[in-house]
Image: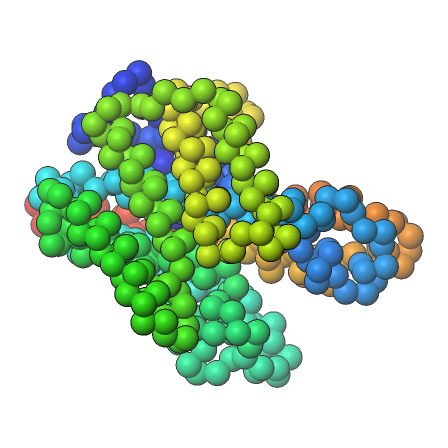
Amino acid sequence: MVAEAGRPLPGNERMTSPQPMKFHSLQILRAVAAIVVVWHHILRAYSIHATAPMATLPPTPLAVAWLREGLAAGVDIFFVISGFIMVYVAGPYVRGTKPPHDFLIRRIERVYPPYWIATLIVIAGPLLKGATGDLTLDRVVRSFLLVPGFNAEGLVQPLLGVGWTLSYEMYFYLSFCAALTLLRTRYWLPLTAGIVGIWAAAIVIGNGSAIGRFLADPIVFEFLFGCAIGWYLQRRGRPRMPFVAVAVAVAVMFGASHLHETGAIAPIWRCLYWGLPAAVIVAYTVSLPFEPTGPVGRFAVLLGDASFSIYLVHVTIVYVVMGRVYPPLIERGLLTRIEPAILLSTLAAIAAGVAFHFAIERPINQWRHRQRSGAGRRAG
């Protein structure tokens, strides 16, 4: 979700060169995953959580449960990508040219500042209205630190709801840093053993706390799936995979979504019925020798660059548009179906995310890169 990518591997080139490589195909997949998650939340907003007058519109067949909930698998794709990219950026730490704590600092700098600003935007509305509601000190502190905590509905979510995924991102980054510290050249051993061992311990202990529930969810294994793709690439080069594998993976995702909605499979196994297909999709994407050409290709890469920002702000935009923009349009008879609302909300969420990327995320990243470059010159 917050991983950085760029130009793809040509031929069977392996991830052993110290020169930076970029995976543009992954950037486009990140854009697709972000838009898929946007659709997931839009369909939930305009069906399950629809308020008047939106609730008076004819229901859309697009909100059928297996499709609506299956689109949430975009998050699983993000997790697999993150695992892959962390293996890609680990080179200097494995070689010992950078200390492991530098890895964690860079991740913290990358994730927290844009997340904090997006969280402040979310809580500004209730505060301006004098509605403190869920804004207890404990809740605010946990949310800003991405420490798991319960919301008013009993879900393990921070104040910015989508931030639950960033809690898993930070947990994975902490685990990765610890593994590099313990066994630098074979970090995959403590990384895998640590994540699996903590999950098993959380299951056995059965702690009902927010952190206990957080650690007992095997969704974190999806990062290891991404790591496995990266380790394969380091040793064997680009995987060879037919497109039919992607088609099967997508079919499995939505088939599993239908089974989940009927109660046939438990959500605890999401890492298998969505995570493994996500790994297939990521492995196929990594194998594509793609270079962005023309305005369409460059725009797709731009959306990938802005995918973190889109993810951070899209839910806020969706509900603001539903509550503020659509009611007068519905009352005047200018909006009579949900499908146009889905399209307009998608465009609004993407536009807001790209604006957040250029106004907030990218300037922050440019500033921290300048700071690091300046510190490097002074040290030299």
